[in-house]
Image (tube, rainbow, N blue to C red; front, side, top):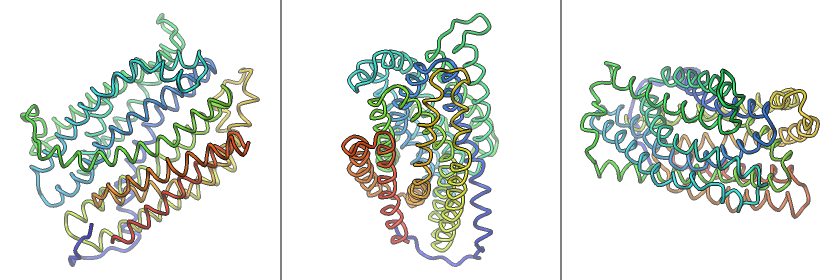
Length: 453
């Protein structure tokens, strides 16, 4: 993982922080907009009914688990393109991006049957019958959007690594407006369309994923500055060498992402055992925390690109300076987020439940309590995702995968079950298990990165 030092004019901390923000803020905005798709689904389903909210949240969680595993290939494309582009290796940029899309399509084909037969899976996980039925119907539709969503992620990584972050932002913002409009029509049955509830939200998500992919494809083909990469020339030709490289980097990333998402998905399943209202409160609190997490994810992506570029130029000092600036900005935002949780938890949770819902007074206090616990893991959560981004920039993914699996599966999930059920702490105990798992991952991942440089 070492990078040889190479003399070059140095920049101060503020200049490096500015470079992180210039690259990272559009990515932050893109991730926030991307997650706003899920937030709008949650809010609008919450206005429709608690049952549809719980089913949509559970279905979205299952979709996200499978999406994150496949997203590893897109995440691998980002540092590889950044490194190759910095070294003026245009052919390699094309090869790894193209095979990233190939692998994403192959993964979609393998994963689709899980979506189509998801109702028995949800029943086997102990969910209430009506929630499992609606959740399965949701997944049988939204599953077809996995392929377009993964291809769009590869294109976003390709464009971000080349500094084209503005288009990534605005395409995602457009998707939010499309999603809200189609949700309004299909969830509630407006403009003469059938009233579909959670199924309507699934159709909206599918449409948004297809539109996003098409717009990004058109941009990548149209922009004159990118044409020399010839990204889609003879696209049908396999490049087995580049495919092996992307798979070797992307599969461990996907498995690491799966380990993290499994921690939160397992918590959703365990919260479902405590009842519909508890699961609804969990889904709302998780939506809020995940929205703020998108800022850390965007900064982490910027760190990946900057570290990848420094690696391509063999500039060890630039790599270290970019890492320090990225970590400092992430810590600053984590502290800010903690203050927001403490001051505005009740108002934020209340946005997700319609004022006349009979369950409102039960769900809001539960959600507020969970947000207080979430404040405890802000530094740990921001720390682990930033360390992952830095390590990906170094194209170090094998050991981080193992660290993630141990921290989340062998420490976090058992801790959540033990505290939630064996210690009788309920939902609070399950969320404290999240704190334990994230803290373990953050410490181990940062230790690996800073030792390596």
